[in-house]
Amino acid sequence: MDEVKEKLTYICSKFRIEGDILVYRWIPAGHINTAYYAAVYNGKEIYQLLIQRVNTYVFRDPVGMMHNIELLTEHVRSKEPTMEKRRRLHFRHTAARNNYIVLKDGVAMGPDEPFDPLDESIEFWRVYNFIEYSTSFETAEGNPEVLRMSGKAFGKFLRQLEDFEAGQLIESIPHFHDTRYRLDNFFSVVEKDELGRAASCREEIGLIEQYRDFGCTLCRQIDRGELPLRVTHNDTKTNNILFDKDNLDPLVIIDLDTCMPGLACYDFGDTIRFAACTAEEDQPDGMQLDLRLMRAYTEGYMSEAGCVLTDAEVKSLATGAAVITLELASRFLGDYLVGDKYFRIAYPEQNLQRARAQLTLFTDMMKHMDEMQAIVRDCAGRE
Ligand code: ADP
Ligand code: GN1
Ligand code: MG
Image: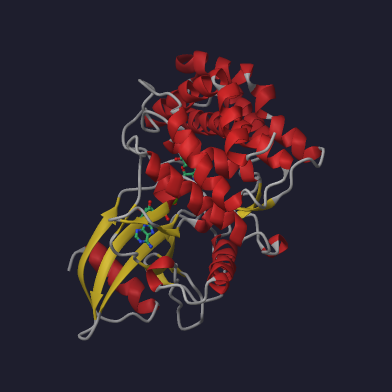
């Protein structure tokens, strides 16, 4: 048996899933965790599973994060108790009732044994149902229906979590969308310039500097109590929704790792950033905002979330798209400057290219801010 298959079989056994792995494959999507599809046959049934290693460099309290996910999936299920299986995430449990295992040097640790998330000999794994006959989108391929259905899905998600008690959640990544903190951190990385890479991206650093104050707009609104904190997803890319392959019906929202208190406008804005544009996340050439796709997303989002958003939140949505694009540019560029420690890369300068693409998109968003605001007003039916 090959090494990966052996490891996945061992992990399954710890989640009380016995049988042979008929096929498995690595799933290349996502910048953070490592995911495998596996089909396990126990002589009677075939289980299709998603087996995932959580990146503990990024998530320093993975046990707390898995507790968040347990509470959130339960809450969503309680809203629609008869929901069919392929519309929900079901995490497997170990004999000790944990929805994760920790391996040290490849061997499972005791259920409550403490571990250091930065220890390179440990691996944190979870197993859940693979959603069959589904697809997700790395780009919207210019199709407004992908955006409309994504807007509906994330709008509904916001509504379903409206009555979730936010105090139950740990912050799985502190300061995740605290743009002021992100920018401060970025400029301290630039100052240190550990690898001497800053000289090659002076123009990009200058652009972020120019908009540093704008980037803090939403933080100031939080300080003044103008925008409510809600339970938000915080990573609303279209590859974090699984759609029915045939009709684009959004089946389930995945990647709940960053669900925590946040602003609605960052969630709204992140899908615009990722999918209402004309190029992929790391392609600066030809990267522009696509207002037609933005309108489709906003229509879908408002049809589900319009009833719960305050006037101030509605007004913040377009700003959210620009701010999160700038924030992510600073995160990608910051990671490039420290040697690509956070985001997985497929080629050496990918984080630099990602930052450039985000800055090109950000510049275009700022140019079209009035039109973006008008689309939001129009779709919300509010002045
Ligand atoms: P990351 O944090 O690395 O983005 P995700 O949880 O988003 O990890 O998973 C990566 C990819 O794996 C997703 O974009 C999706 O394509 C696929 N995937 C994740 N969960 C499932 C699932 N339950 N069923 C089918 N595909 C999945
Ligand atoms: C990461 O894990 P993934 O690929 O869904 C990142 C997001 C970024 C995104 C950019 C935990 O998301 O914040 O916006 O890449 N997730 C984390 O594509 O940092
Ligand atoms: Mg993901």
